[in-house]
Image (cartoon, rainbow, N blue to C red):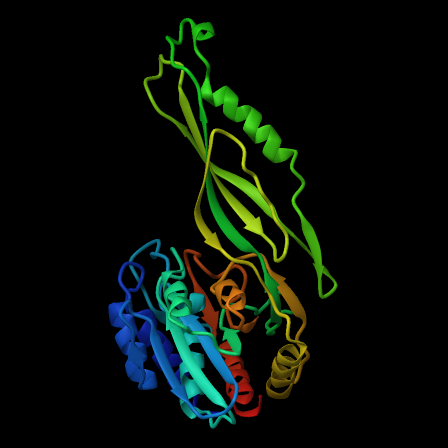
Length: 342
């Protein structure tokens, strides 16, 4: 246990640093905190301890932009401000736990840039050989199945941003029979998408199902011309070990591909559950998150991954984002216990 004032103080300091366009200042702050190193794109790394196995605390430095001017304050035992929940509170809990830990094996702290956009931070790290045996991702698992309590996330869906294009033939809109309307062609594509059953899989007794959502549709040209091109953008949610191909239309392009994740190591799951029980007095449930995280890339690279953090489902990216100080303190204690005893 420790003085919670430090946890609150450091979290507020980091939240006050804007990191939605440029993470440089946030990288320096975190690097100084853990006495680490910054790589060429801004990722922060620090390590301590020795052993055959390596366990890593994983967080990210960036946030989405605030809806209004950035304000940081505490009220009703919560810290408010963009990034407090996603995920600077958890980052600080990991950093302070890392600093205090006396691990029996190699312990690494890693905080990545670009998680909210193109996952360039974790991709760069993996490409350059970062592959811990165990990765603890500090994304939110609070208030999922139990009020004001932490759960353990054992799987999450991936996310693809997909663009599909249909082509037609232009003509004057007064004589559409002389052309081929690309929008009408897109209607056929949309029907095919709707008629494609998303794959599903049972994960630790829960159903995990893929899905898709059309988020944008557009065409070009004047309003009195039959359009010769139409494009939709889709948010496609994927699941581990299952293909969900929606390759319809004349052109199909994957813009981004954030991988799904499933924890394969029962020993890691039970160790984290024991730490939660020891530090909080309650038993966590195993949950599946609908959102994608950096965990998928680490899992794909051979790291056993699992997720635990203080953020609640409704907080990330919200207009009045906040994190519970009580749950943040519990999270710190769980991280420290796991680092010392796993």
